[in-house]
Image (tube, rainbow, N blue to C red):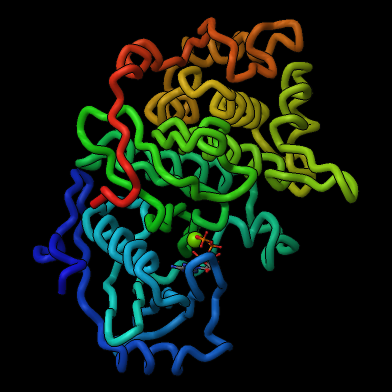
Length: 369
Ligand SMILES: Nc1ncnc2c1ncn2[C@@H]1O[C@H](COP(=O)(O)OP(=O)(O)OP(=O)(O)O)[C@@H](O)[C@H]1O
Ligand SMILES: [Mg+2]
């Protein structure tokens, strides 16, 4: 099978490997019987590439099967990318691949079933009224998803940019552990390249400006999207809010002025009924906002994000609180445009990346993998 040349060993590459079966090939017949012939009642949801169905295998284990909807070379490419990347990475906070099926025109990906579905369903979807996300769970989801993305950026070999971090791609297991899903958009970053230029993919409201406008994909685009996700998680608001028929407001435009005025309680999800740790709420919101700065070099790395979220370094938390961004409209960093040159961030991973920018490799999309 020409598209899966690297799938011969079926082993993950990571350090944090745990005992679990590796992937396997499923037959179409087996998946038909597991999902009651892709019955509508088994459907968990639908995304850009197809529908996802709940299923049960002969051994009783529960699976989620993503059935790609359109047959095209592009879909085949996405399929190959997703399967290859998922087969390589194993981490407690990443959704594991159980296998795939490629028979005739059918392309299917089999995952572990996540009993609590997606973060999206709890924040804005079918579970939002039940209000199952108390503050403790939200912190666990914030830190868990940060761990998963940190693994992709810093520990996987080669490093991986996700490119579609959003609430529907953070799935929740039966204990509300976060599992980052959907690597179909991801691309491997070749050694030595600071970013990969490619056609823009991803989801409105989560896209970093340099990616949306210039197609520059890098780890810091994921950091931006993760910042939006954190704001959404803490506030319960959507990334883009419709104010009236013609106007939409971004979650950052709403949150930054309130954070500058230290009105953190006004930013908290009302469904929390004021039950949260004030320190942690402040921390999540401030981290989120430094992640969503317009200039990519000012954003922290995921390693720094993780350290800040966990509150591991008191010194860095003080720096975060005194960050220029939160000094209001007169500070240089507030509403910083792409054109502002001076770099005053405490979290800029900048110099190294700046230096490399001139000789960055530009890789056309079809050159990947
Ligand atoms: N492993 C899984 N376990 C449980 N539910 C899942 C699983 N995978 C996906 N889902 C559900 O199926 C829905 C659709 O997923 P899908 O990835 O196809 O679309 P999406 O995330 O909304 O958009 P995109 O295509 O941009 O990723 C998700 O929102 C989620 O609720
Ligand atoms: Mg998805």
